Amino acid sequence: MTKDEFLDKVLAVLNDAGVASSADDVMIVEGAENLRLIAERLYPSAWRRAVGLFPNGWFCAKSFADSPVVCDAACGTGYTVLPEDYFVLLSFRMRGWKTNCVTAYEETESVNRKQGNEYTRGTPERPVCVLRKVLTDDVLRLALCYYSLPRTAEGAVHEIAEALYVPNVKRIDDVLDVDDRLIEPLVYLCASAVLTSLEKFEAATQVEKMWLG
Image 1 (cartoon, one colour):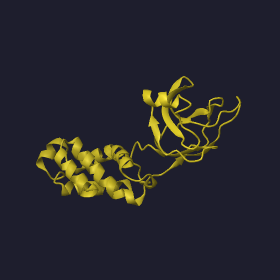
Image 2: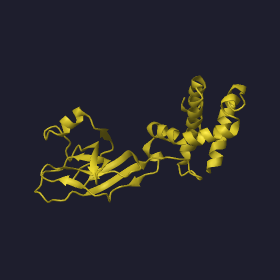
Image 3: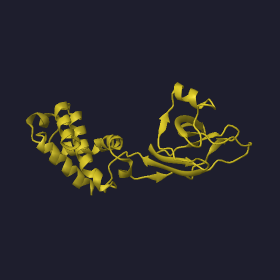
Image 4: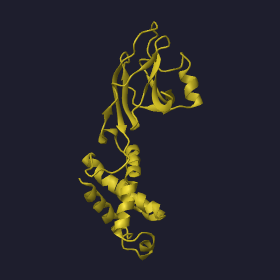
């Protein structure tokens, strides 16, 4: 589906909601073209909402299995710097783990305390991943810290077996590269975002209910 086809669908939903033809809205946005521009600008936020609402399998996955690993072999832990377009983790597994990790926890004092204790942190049977900022080449970057592998001698190498993530979307492309199952939900979420930006909160809720139920 092209960008224009998608935005036409969003405008159709807004028209059904009575926004595109409302006299009040003409004072705020000068006709459908401005509504189209608003929808285009808000597409990324609608897409990010969709990631939290629908199955991971509906989203394009990218690999970061080739990313360098910084490990503390003596402790059985380490980290890898995430790609700059990282949005959410799909699956991560180090060689030696018995299962994949599909959740990356935000760093908190409680999480650090638990994962910093060798008796309570993750294991090869129940691995744990934590998102943390690290300094790389004098720049703070988001990294995925993993817990844990068996302790080994210094100099041992940790290897990534699988690493998949959903990349962030920062703009709507001329041709949408999304699963067909996402098109209609994204149309309604984008229309709802437009209504919210116009402070039409009740209409925004109603539009979401039309699809999400």
